[in-house]
Each structure stands twice: as C-alpha cells, then as structure tokens.
Image 1 (cartoon, helix red, strand yellow):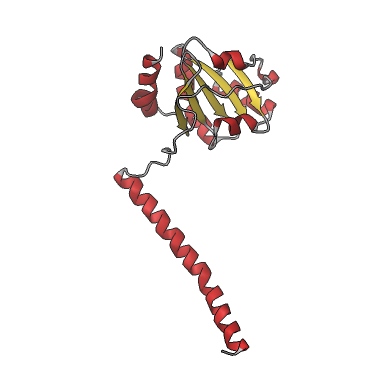
Image 2 (tube, rainbow, N blue to C red; image 1 turned 45 degrees about the vertical axis):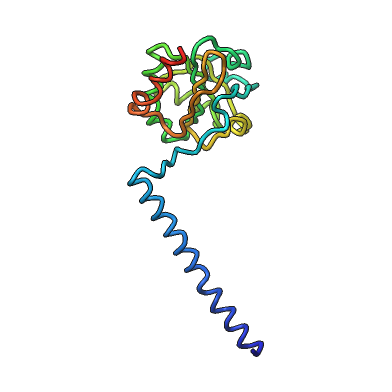
Length: 192
C-alpha cells in the first residue's frame, strides 16, 4: 500500500473515532438509565471503605465567623452517643435542599458536627444565618484534606458515628425526609 493511501485510511479512521466514542458513551448512559429504572443501579451505591472502622480524626480550625466552636479528635473518637458528621458548603445547591432535614434532626436532639468544605468562612456564616444552624460544632476543610480522609464524593455527604466513634453509615447526596424515615432514624435508634 502506498504512503498516500495509508495516510488516507488513517484520516478516515480518525474521523470515525469520535463517532464510535459517542456511541459507546450513549450505550453506557442508556444502560445506566435502564438500571435506575429497574432498580439494579443505585447511583449512591458506592460503598464507603470506612463502614465499621473508627472515623478519621480531624484536626481542622473552627469557622470563627460563625461563632461556633470547632471540634477535634475527642468528639469523633468516643462521642458517647450517635453523632452525624456532615460535609457541606454554602455554594452547594443540594446542601440547601438537605438543610431542613438537618434542622429537624437538630431539634430532635441529634448532635451534628459540620465540616465546611472548600468554602469561604464569610459565605458559610451567611448560609447559616439565612437557613439556620443545625451544627453543635463546625470546622473548615478549606483545602479538602478531611474530604480525602473520608473518601468524600462531593457535598453534601453525611456519616453516622456510633457511641464509640465507629462509622456505621454514609449517605452521599442530600438527606431527604424519605432517607431519614427509611434509613437514618432506624440507625439512630439502634446505636443510641
């Protein structure tokens, strides 16, 4: 085969490559949607490696602008009662959706420790002033290192620690009333 003919075949193959990639992506997306429809695919179903292990210790500063105290290793190592660790940010739209559930949990006496993720302290303070404060303590994870320790997929994300500081549950995404009644309330009673 001549050099010109080989070059022509290579160009033609390169032209078809994007179409092939798009078709493969479309098939994958279709399979995901079908799985969500029949229940065989759960987008939140990625398990956490932390379940059944002591919670990673956090050594982060308090968000001074909020007036809330920070928390350290002792609050996570043996909290004495179930506690939620909630990663959130003021720029996170699903965090606004989740916030009424956090406020309801706080009113019921559930202790919630907040981790403000890659956020500006002043914006975090404005968020809590506007929507209310469900946190008993709040720290700033400005660089995202605690998020890495926890295996964070994004915000919001919530972890339930039992009375001994062991991670018993993780929820990626906003907490909803259905999540509370179907999963979290049961676990809070079990680990009380």
